[in-house]
Amino acid sequence: MIRKDIKEFIKTIPNSITLVAASKYGNADDIRCLYSAGISNFGENRVDSFLSKYESLKDLNITWHFIGHLQRNKARAVVDKISYLHSLDSLELAKLINKYRTSPLNCFVEVSINLEENKNGVPYYQAKDFVKECFKYPNISIVGLMMMAVASSNEESLHLQFRKLKELQEAISKDLNIAIPFLSMGMSEDYLIAIEEGATHIRLGRILFYK
Image (cartoon, rainbow, N blue to C red; front, side, top):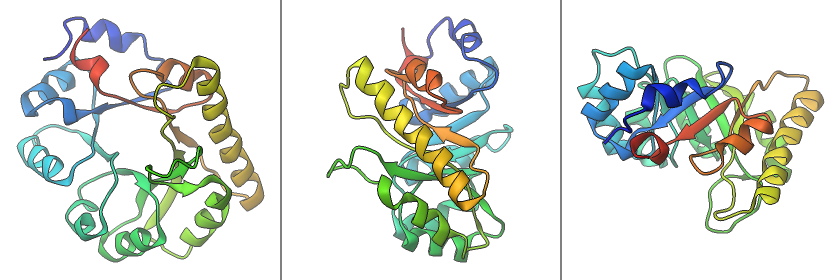
């Protein structure tokens, strides 16, 4: 169920920030309600759910993001239907995208800032070399970096984690002499801190669906 004050909530997000609604929390009708309220960027994290909603909502001018881990055996079904992938985390996946995509796909490299064993992502110390390797694939366009903060982090720790990704973005851009304009970081619990530290894209789910 969409929160009743959704239009007022959307107004609290700076115009410079892209709000990506994590649509796993709602069905197609919920997405229509959010779209009517002014949200046009939606992110799914499961392939089957994405494909179902994609077909049901073709009449809307939605910008689709895939924000979950994309399994390589399911990549072909998705890559030509999305505008942004927030979870590029292996060269094997990059090769498949390059093979199946008909035009360059905007990709965020998912970075493991905290090196958590149970999380996906390119280790932060390998991120620059990873980005450089992706230059080989004409259908991969690296537009940003993405991260997930450690669950239950305190405010100080969140600032440090998000700042680390921002600094990595700046370092890679300088060292490789390229523009990596976007940072996908911040979710319902921590998006305000992420914005303070330079997020350009925030992935909001639960906070849109109930108060």
